[in-house]
Amino acid sequence: MAASLQRIGIVICRTFPVILQRNIQAQRIRDWKTSAPVLRLNFRALSSSSSSSSSADDTDSTEVLSRYSDRPWEYLESEEYIERYGSKPVWSNYRRNHKGGVPPQKTRKTCIRGDKICGNPCPICRDPNIIVHYKNVNLLQQFISPQTGIVHDPIRTGVCMKQQKLLNKAIETARDCGLLFAQLPHVDYSKEDYSNTHGAVAPTPAPFSLSSGELWYPWYGSIKPDERELARVKRIYKDYLKPDV
Amino acid sequence: MLFTTSPSIPCGSLKGGSSIHRRSDIIYSMAAFSFTRCLVRSYFCVKCVDHVQTRLQTTTRMLCVSASRSSFVDAPKAQFTDTEVQDILSKITGLDLKKVFRPIRQQLTPPKYKLMTDTELEEAVRKAEEQAKHLLKMPPVLPERKPINDVLYEDQMLEGMDTAKYVFTDINFNVPHRERFIVVREPSGTLRKATWNERDRLIQVYFPKEGRKITPPPIFKEENLRVVFEQDRHEDVLNQCIVQFEPDSAEFKNVLMLTYEDIEKHGKYDLLRSTRFFGGLTWHLVNGRRIDGLLVDMLQRDLMQDAVRLVRLFNLVHPQSESAQQAQTQQAADLDLLKIYAQYESNRAGFIELAVQTHEQTKALSSF
Image (tube, rainbow over all chains, first blue to last red; front, side):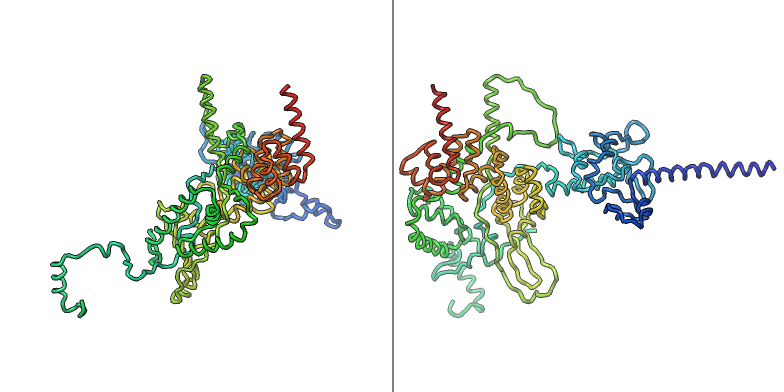
């Protein structure tokens, strides 16, 4: 009786933390999924009647899609964004959890692996409505210093490395398309010659043809060979010379 | 990898050709104001060929053509590189030190404070003005570069050897980019010189310039340009353009033209004032005979001297127009030029005359 009770106690003690952990994680995923206003359940309920909003079409039973996935810049003007962040950047109230005073010089690789989200996700991953897109200029501006124009380090903002890479790419595309300001170097035109007369870029000049009596090199005629040397060479190669030479 | 010149182009003739070109340039530029000078000058505006024979032929051809045209041309047409034209354009551009030296996005350093006497302060301001003049140097306005269609050799034996083109580039460091040989071996076996686009791309690959991309960025597409123009960021577009393209390429001229057209359509001349692009804008408008908008803008901002200089530039560039001829006959100066222009050429004559009159009145009142 006591042994069986003990065994039951051991089993409970071993399984309870696992169950607790699983419950906590499930709760976190549920919170993360429901915090995105997905009309999935509503759509199923109103399946017979036609729903007017076109954004209800992006329902996928396996994936969670945000309402703003088509136009991510609209989220930054919405009430829920202003209520949550106000006028501060999205990374202002985020704090990393790390041991010691100095944080690791690289943030985590990614917050979301498959279906699981980690504890304390980075400022972009914790809000599924924030989508990094090159047209989402207001969001991208929050991650660029207004004085120097340099992209903030992930250690400062707290974003995971995967989102930082996406950010860098989006900022570069936005600068290429002219949506963001890009500082360019001053171009100096004083040193270049634009006459385009060199043979490399102009039509090739016709080959140089000799007129009668003209020599290929002008000094051909002026140098006279030594008489003794000439006689010696002629004597040596007597058999090979032409008869008139 | 060094690339040797092909044996069909002996170095002697190239050197001889280029030295002849330079000597005649010096002689002709020093010559007096004469018929031959304007002829040869207009000839050298077009790119000249190296070979002596063809040059003589083209000179005789130009002589024959110009003889028939002499009745229409009274005075020579001013070019962008003339000292007088450059002088006028730089004066019109203005020198607003606050705009030229506005803070740019760069790595910040702590500010430096200096205690200066009045003379030192003037010296510092003078140095700043020199630096500003250097920063406001206008990008050159050049004729469009001729396409390169030169086949060096056709080798049927190499046909079908490979499916890709091979590009051979001369990467000697001390060769100017315009004298670099870049040749392409096609899969059909022809060896030809690379086109201008290919040249620009390959030179950017081997000798990358800061800010320039290998393929032009999408900002230069129509829809993106429209968005940027709506945000009034013409200067940024022009900066991107001069960094990306060569000044004699077609894309460069196209982007400049689109920007200038948009500015002129909306009258946003002040955006470019005191930048290095104002001269180019003025030159484009003067050549198109559409300086009314700019003139009205100047008069609204009370820039009478600039307006007078603009009309003088117009008369220099179009010497056979009515206002130029009238100005010549009457030997007009200052505000009379404006009146003559308003009378003969302008579409908004009323506004210009009114502005001139109000200015004269205010001047008369203030002098009392």
